[in-house]
Picture (tube, rainbow, N blue to C red):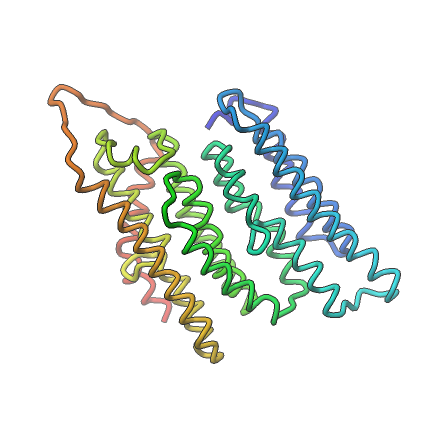
Amino acid sequence: MLLMSNSNKMIFLFILFFSTLISISSNSWLGCWIGLEINLLSFIPLMSSPQNLLNSEASLKYFLTQSIASINFLFAIILSMFLMKNFFFNNFFSIIVNSSMLMKMGSIPFHFWFPNIMEGLSWFNCFILMTWQKITPMILLSYYLNLNYMYIIMILNVLVGAISSFNQSSLRKLMAFSSINNLGWMISSITISENLWMIYFISYSIFTFIMCFLFYITNIFFINQLFFFNMNFLIKISIMINFLSLGGLPPFLGFFPKWLVINYLLNNNFIIISFIFIMSSLILLFIYFRIIYSSLLFFSFKLKWFKIFIKNNILICIYFFNFISMLGMIISTFFF
């Protein structure tokens, strides 16, 4: 995806991965903050591409929001050092730290920058923003959780992510709101256990990668392009399967981590929260079904002599993974 031929971008990508490890493995809040700053300054050069007109606007917006979040984080750290002489945070400080981390990853109520910036990025950068850029804030969030605050944020995330997906014509914005919805599930999984969060995050990252890769090779950015796309029927079916996995429809593998989260929530008597989670997933599935139904069943003419072969070795892996995804619940029964 143009990165392999560009040494500068490869260096920045390496620094991006490295900065996340700095933040996660740091034993002081200041070290975490330094890792976050390196992460921010390494992602901005990755955003720039000469083909994209919106990239400078997107990188400026991204820089401003992330800087504000970093300032809040640093402010909370320094203030607690002055006032308390040690890092025993009270409610006020925990809410500031949690809010700055939520702003870093584009969660409710600081989510307004997220779909706008996604709109100005390439599919590869969208993938990084939706997956890798959420790791550091999530881990730092788990170090000090204000649980009552998090429960409100979780519910708002899943509701806003589902409802805002209506009437979206851009696939990048649709993926952004899907990411916000999944963020609610991820925050709930990290309040339960870090292992559960890792299972959820890895499966979510795989599905997001497949979606972004399929949209990248077919050069699709808007929903109406799916209706007239008749180059390769297998790719269309792959997009359908991954949409349903992202929504969490039971026979597919994407339901497995959601099932685990619902299981834990019900065991701990969070009945209302789990009900809201399931309802929001149903709304998202309705939106995805509407797109898939239209794109598969629209009449589109096909010329007999018009053959396009998309040759890509990763596609074979994706078809194999789709096969696993369809048999996902059969595989997941071995876990129980």
